[in-house]
Image (cartoon, rainbow, N blue to C red; front, side):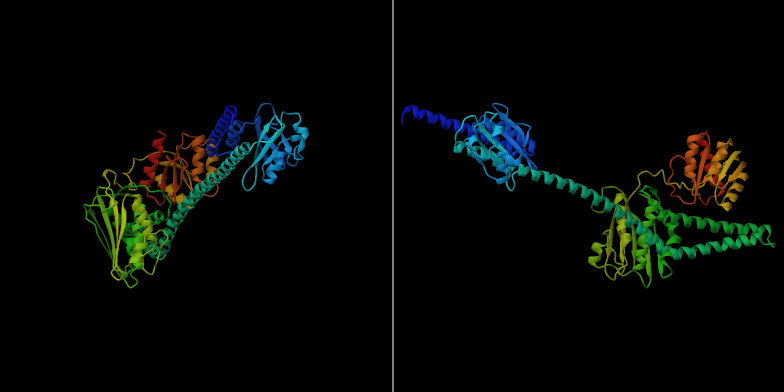
Length: 565
């Protein structure tokens, strides 16, 4: 072998090695490509140099057309143009899934000569891209006729295979991203469904309690109505005397106040609200629940409490804590079908493992009922677990969730046939200054005067309220619906304050308040409602719950007028 021939072969080997190096760089770039645009850009940057062609083109299948999306060429080819797939070499390669090797474009029936004779192309290789079904192709073009070398074909096919892999990976990543998006959406939906289910569960728990209370409440209400009706009858009797009037009026008032407390507690149990933790005095809270608990438990269950007078207040929502204790008491009652005893006690103790360091009070609710088996005890606090045969159900999950929200916990001590103790741990309130009762009436205000517009659709309530207001010294005008009140004010009547019921036919009290705040902001406002769950538009509007006494009404009017002073 001559030295010249050896030199030529050495140069060819170096050139071939350089091309494979370029191809390796291209394949490495394709490995990181995640989109069709990225794959096209890599082929446009590397393919021509890798195969030593005079031009390359990247073609995409678009239905029945071949779209020449990119090219790198010594002279313009067909970038941006579309051709019917049946009349295009790239279409043939994609349709058959084979490499088209064409040494002479003028001597191959697959070539549309009219499209090529205006270009430099005289020979070519077209390789499909895509494994199961080709969706693209890459073509290499030379300006001279001749058979492309095996290496040139192999290099182009290697790039096409790498592009196919990249294209498949891109589809997989896109599918994975779509799946992740769907999963995230599903997780959000399931979380929302769970929150709604938990909210429904809490309402079902309240409804279960209300259902069990109905009979007892009816009995208690009839007991309270008896002295009220009897006392009023005796006051109206012809044989009445000043002494009997005072005595019977006092008994009727005492019964009415007891009925008011009972209604307020029932409204507390039924209403929906977020936790509002405050300092709660447990002895006072249990004392207030004593009558309700006794009537709920019935005559066959003996109720006892043991709470030290110096017990520190706990940080809790008083309304929700009352509901939790009532639920747990009902569970205990159901666990004692033949009667028994229920003890509620509390003491200040060091926290159990799992709670943050600090001061805690442990409330223990102990019954002498049927107790729980280990399996029931293990599942008792699951949100949807209930087994009334064991006597414990919905109240446990609610109480457990409440304790957790307040920074405490709930524990169960129970054995089959040996009763159950529910231990409710709550943190001690660190701010001892706010334990007063906001519902207590303030000292009587001094006699006031002024024009007052009273709005209430109930004639009896309107009449009794009007008499209270007149006795305070107000010049009262009363109407039975909000629309009339608004038309009077718009016509020129200017009261110092409007006292309105909330729930009325047509325009509500809250809607009337909005109109007055907008059009007549100088008029003071007081809204009276038959229930505490009123959702006021403006949170600073003073409100008063029915039933009320003159001292409550006068204090509320003073607060409302002070806002406009």
